[in-house]
Length: 458
Ligand SMILES: C=C(O[C@H]1C=CC=C(C(=O)O)[C@@H]1O)C(=O)O
Image (cartoon, rainbow, N blue to C red; front, side, top):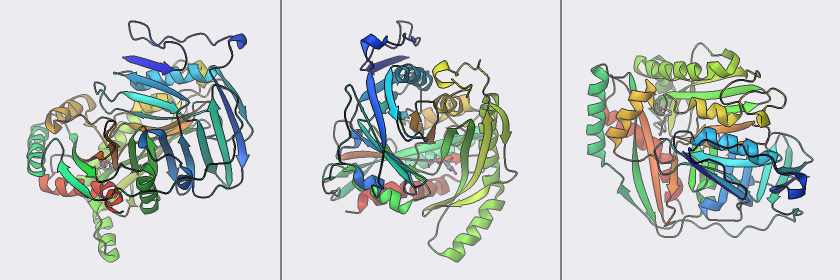
């Protein structure tokens, strides 16, 4: 477990244990000066992004509301098993050393860090929290701009963004496994499930897109947001996508999570799709897969909540490419101190674990790993033969009080750090004893569709 933090002081000791460094004295000056002021409605958030490079472009937007950001005022990097918790500790420490002026005071104002974390603890992708230099947000009819810098700066007028460019011609290649090899790998996993090793394994695959022109993040984000308005359109450190699955939101003492598992493809014909939605809601294979996912989420969330509400039956979430069985779980976060993931800086009012601490506790859910978690994730790592990097890991944002929203990075792609004409797309499927490998392959294609289509349109 390691972490690095710029600017600021070393975050970990030689044993990898986070050091909660003392808050600098006022004489030393704050690490960052953060100012939020209210602005007139700035229009479509994503169209404000001035920077085309994916790594400097941040977004968490759904149905026109949310946050966009650009530039890097501060970056925290972590790695290893404790990558999410360690980022949370480091965030609490960092926030305590900021000078903050927030004239709006709603979720998403004041200091905000966007973050993304690898699926697997041993992935070199690790984890990152970034405080952008500028964040623009909108919520419930109010809009604001936040600036973060080492010196007090006044936010000037928002810059006129340069025109968005399309990716040009796109060529596709297999990732770690070709289609047939992946279906064979799924067959092997079905055999292991039937033999009783585990109940469910989520098997993912990757495909690689090579574009004619460097990827303009705004091109992809605009298309994803327009096509998938009920999803969270995210961009953090080169990872972009539109996820329908909320790992956890913590807001004013309430936790909420949207669990998805059980999928059927859309046909494009409304009458057929309605019939399929009814079939999905009755399918014993999908209901079993879904129940496993809800039960494991509730098990992981329960220790952090004074009470939890779980609807009796799932609803069917209709997306343009697929339909999912979905359950919205809510809970009252236990404000009592004493959880291992509760940090004082996040809990001045006894709010309990931060959104990121909750994300750490919930990841990986059965919707992306399987059940039971340990053996299922070992099986998927063997069978997929690839590093998932930040696909299927927590992605989202956290504010100064620990509230925030963390999705699961699905329906996503990662722009190559060395070559911004290369994007690796991912999709996975919950495999249970009754799974048919070729049907799972077709399902994975449907899940790749949002990113494929966003890349293919010029
Ligand atoms: C792992 C993915 O989807 C998960 C989320 C919803 C439904 C799923 C399913 O039905 O298999 C998956 O568990 C993915 O999109 O890459």
